[in-house]
Amino acid sequence: MKVKIKKGGKVKQFKLINSWSDVTLETWLKLIEFDTGNKAEEAEETIAALSNMPKQLINQLSLRDVAVIMGEVAKLQAGQDSSLKRIIEINGVEYGFHPKLDDITLGEYADLETFIKNGIEKHLPEIMAVLYRPVTEKTDSGVYTIKAYDDSLTIRAEEMKKMSAEQVQGALVFFYRFVNVLSMTSQSSLMQTLKEMKEQLQVNPSQKNGDGSE
Image (cartoon, rainbow, N blue to C red; front, side):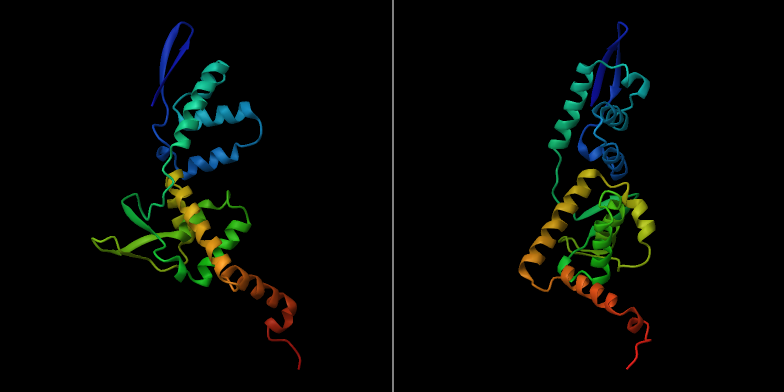
């Protein structure tokens, strides 16, 4: 999308994102970070992140021009496709969303819960790195398998920063629905199990280390 700005009697043209799918997770994290309550600063950083307009010019824009640009950004965000993308491609590598969340391991769920508790905005790349892993096998019918959960989470999280914001939002919506259903249908959900395990380990640390007395 192109935006025309008239300044000093001259009209200059700049590029603005065409759709919300053009916004990477890395850029989206910056936009979240700029949500400080200072509307002028937020507008400046948003326009700078989503266009090729220099900040020096952004600061010289009229409030009407800023309102028009921010309005276009809002329309693009509202029109995003937030459906789950089961297979995405990053740098030529296909990553598949966990094919069956019902079979998620305790280790995977524990890491997800930790990242969410420690601040979902700060750990979105890591969360995506748990939910998305390299596709190891795929059929024409759409059935696929993914790489087993391993210790390459940090490396994969860096790759996940290249995901689009709408891919991330679609994955989060799907995952949260799964967690809500799991919590409602099972009195012994993974979340409750993790809580009980944590409480049990904290009862007597010495026994955990094998130092307990008879």
